[in-house]
Length: 556
Ligand code: ADP
Image 1: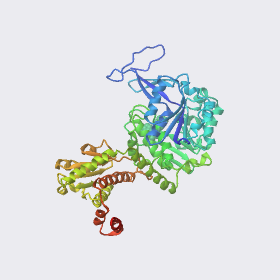
Image 2 (image 1 turned 60 degrees about the horizontal axis):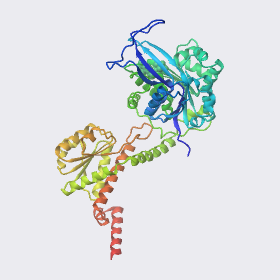
Image 3 (image 1 turned 90 degrees about the vertical axis):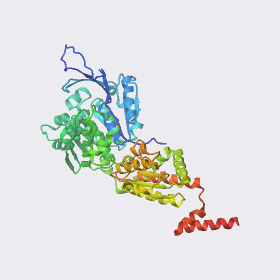
Image 4 (image 1 turned 120 degrees about the vertical axis):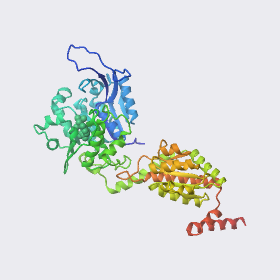
């Protein structure tokens, strides 16, 4: 079976940054004592970094499936980097045969000035033949590839970009060094020029853009000049707190930055790039891609270091951006044909949106089925049946879309012989608690489990003495904490371009509660006669009565 495709595969700088605090940055022949980072006395602090690994980290937290290939040393720094990759689910296609894994010693003084000593080690040892031989099959799994002009030899960058072109995989080239440095350290000027022409999207650092574009200081003009020169699908320039400039086919936009409480700007450009690819993957148009990428850049500046320090940063990016990112699963397949056309083709048609949504539903429900706790559903059924023995009834409640689920479930349960009524969540605090008896069971539905109205109602219900079953996507939520028993119905993505309207979460709630109704129906031993008796009208009632009559005739 072919291996799954990955949204973004990267190759290039992956570095352990080792931070030291020093009273000042010293000159040659001087000595100085290092200081502790904090009260724990820690002097040496290690962080995962390197611009390509950072791209992948930020793309991963935005839901992209990512991978990395290249060379490392079989050493402690390499193991540290791989643990960082594992934390974010970055698939690895690495050989450990390099001289040393790449690291940087970073000395920071109390004013934030830095002196950085870098060892590119194994990254500088990756050869074109390694790319074309050992890594080719992994590369072919990519929908996007990111690479850099920073640590890799230029010939290796060319091999990666060429292979990507041959397989119609669009590429982003992060040009971190100006040509004067790149050509002195990594290869020839001809190789440098060739690499830039091969990239689908070129993202030069400011110093590099200035050296290439001549005198102009205006990012939009610089980007336009570079695009005209190298023929890229797009050229994207970031400008710190000014935001970014994007020039592409029929597009020339400046997108302003978001306001950020800056802690450390290291790696903001890498976060920007990771989010930019994520935006392109879900089919956003360029101005939206710029906004999303700016949001990631801004969030990156609020943490120490360049690699995302926790997966929850996604919600902060989406909050700034003002919407949820769509899903990798709902994306259009890679467009076939020329590499140049791919990003526009990936904007996806309406048909893709629809087909991807239906696929997403199956995936979400499939994942939920795999982790369903059937024992918990039986415990819920037992709780309800025990309440019924004391003449207790069931009430079902929810706020927003789950309110409609609550109405449906109350009706469903009643139809199979479990007396159930809908309970209005907000009315609960305004008198409707009177409909609940202390022997009753209330089922409260909330995807987040933290909706204020439902939590307030849940507390009142518990204080009233009734039992509470929570149905929620978050086992650690407030509602789950209050409830006697929790049935979890988590989903990763709601579907649709915005990913906001409750869709799959509602299906998950119905899925779990319809299952509970099956458990109750079986435990009760519901007969077709009973079912028919409660369905006096309609096709269902008629079908049940016909079935009952046929069974009676058979018995006779
Ligand atoms: P690099 O890390 O490559 O130097 P920049 O400093 O240009 O990149 O930052 C990349 C992106 O991060 C910017 O385009 C912007 O969206 C965001 N960003 C960077 N610095 C700030 C800041 N001070 N305030 C808000 N956003 C910022």
